[in-house]
Image (cartoon, rainbow over the protein chains, first blue to last red):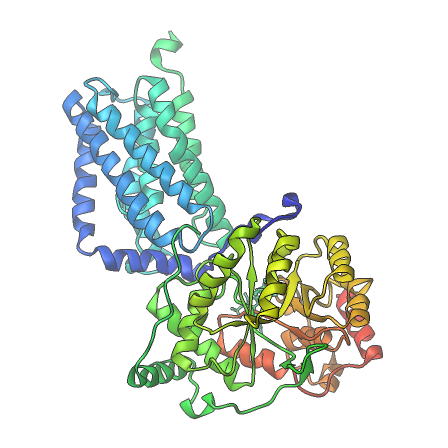
Length: 227
Length: 313
Ligand SMILES: NC(=O)c1ccc[n+]([C@@H]2O[C@H](COP(=O)([O-])OP(=O)(O)OC[C@H]3O[C@@H](n4cnc5c(N)ncnc54)[C@H](OP(=O)(O)O)[C@@H]3O)[C@@H](O)[C@H]2O)c1
């Protein structure tokens, strides 16, 4: 809000959108993108199959799909829709672009990332997060009175994309690469949780919960470590 | 904001009429009442011949709606009701996202350029960016010139005040001022008020945020500077806090039917306050707020009673 003692500002002094404008963002986005929604759901379903039955080529395909989604959301949602309304979103859009580049970069490598094939707590949480983002998160808007028109879909909007990516990175190896690609989705989920809390929106705790679950998965001792 | 503001739209008469009716419909307001129906109390901006209605309209958050056609219509309906109730001063800033463009859109739809007292701000730490920013703001509003330009939150005030003085001398702006809010930087504001030639200052003043009464409001009277009161409702927090409490029975004596009117009447009855600028998204609220700028207003004794009552809740 300009010069002055920054510590005297409360987070809600910095939020520039009202609940109605925030809700309308998703409605307008869905309207503008129709009929991209069935395609997004189909690609999300494909990605879930890859997670359930991974292989080197499939994992690369998954990384490329994620990269595409991060770039798409950066441009169409964050940059074009949200940034004109909320200060600070333009640099976030750039960071989303960077995440897309990192994902694409890993996808180009032959062995950029491995996904586990055997069931474990870590894999369970990871796939659970991805499935939630694909199937349940879009139902949040209709379930809380915002209607199907305001549904937030994986691949088209930031929250489910960040949660799904957390799911993938919660179980991927090598750990260092997974951690690097987990950072931005986690930060977005925290920012989103704060925004939704300030807006008094239901389900504000869901994105931060996804971060907590992804961290739990990553820190969960592997069978090798237990031995 | 990274993206440039869209230019104000130029409209044909037919589209304009359609817009007016849409605005009226959206507000359940008969189109006829878009003509000025009531006259609120006014106060002259000190040292000028401009009489301003004592309740204006803010635009932080409420008018930041992007290019959403539905919400642009809703904001147009709010402005239609504002003008219909005799309102004039609308306050915005380049800091308010797309609010300036929303105002420009509504001014175009309502053909209200002759009604509005356009108050905007310059908000950049770099002096050389000031003129470009002001010009972008002017285009977003679609006004030939601003009535009032204020240095937002005192940011880069020394340089910007020089720019604004030069613009005023050249007839490119009528009045100039500075703003702050939340009780911040009152010492610096006092310093500037003593030093610079200002037409107005804008600061936070309401029934619970009364620090300005100590030095700034008396100084404004002494120096002949108008005062615009922002955050009259603490961005609704104050109204929410009071909502569960009963209005005192004697609120009727000052013509306050709601808490919003109670608060506004307290603010605008201070002798130094030129006007208060509540922001709203609702037609009913804008009418309610403008209706507070009518007789009777509280006298000094009543003002004390009002403040004590709220303190006791
Ligand atoms: N530094 C600065 O220069 C500075 C700083 C702060 C503010 N300002 C200016 O001052 C203006 C006012 O401040 P503000 O917008 O922060 O807060 P405000 O005017 O105190 O509060 C706005 C809120 O009050 C509600 N409201 C309005 N009329 C109402 C009524 N009759 N009954 C119930 N609720 C009502 C509105 O909700 P509804 O939409 O539901 O009506 C809105 O959410 C700003 O918009 C801006 O133009 C300037």
